[in-house]
Length: 312
Image 1 (cartoon, rainbow, N blue to C red):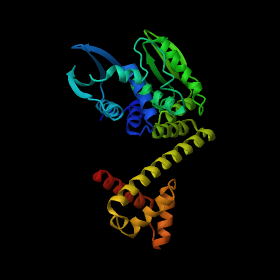
Image 2: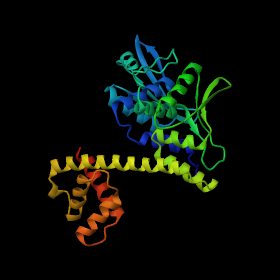
Image 3: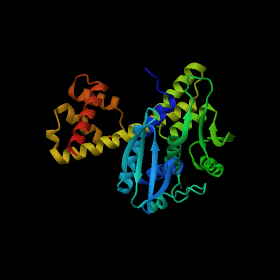
Image 4: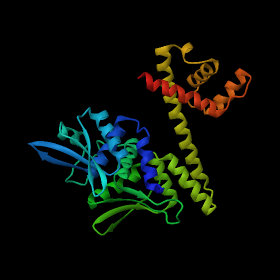
């Protein structure tokens, strides 16, 4: 079986996570379309085309375009050189969309109206990495993350985004390699920070764990950042669970959602959005006077989530 590259692992995590705010999603789209998009003219219409080699990425961008712009995007594929290539096309409202995303295919600038704070910077850089990024496996001693571009001016504008992000000290460099301009990061701690920034939390944890095991280095500041990322994921999960539970209660009534254990789990999640599963398991165990495991609590939330999805 072919081993999945670390770059693909990171990119798969990016497209499996919730970007959050509409503005962050627009920043993400702006970056991806700027780098991988093109506008062609057919029957006097402007048509936006995006080409992909990865079906998951194609479907993700397709869904995001429909969500944000309610567009009539079309997803198709062609077989080329014994492999399948995917194409997303939009032929309605293209000029307005490109303008709204601040995309210019002629200039190298990044729109300050689209990318203006930490949230949108993170979304934009996630879009850039998904478009053209790569990162070495942490199992190698050659730490290296890079993003390459055809336009030198654009690469320099991208460099200027990093100092504007308030929670890291990432300091990338720029080199010219053949006909490409490459923005790269070599320091392992800065690569880890970048993975956190673009939302690849699990990949960051894997990166750090392998690096620490190999180098026998335990960087307290990095672990603190990972703890913060873990807490952020817990809070996001708790918020989602609260919203889904409230929806189910309104639709079916609390008494119809499960037995006493399920109702206790619901009670504590509604009371404590950020409580980890271990804490809820402990509270339910005390109420029922029997051991309830973390995995049991997780199973209950998974079943509630499945019921929520089925009821939408």
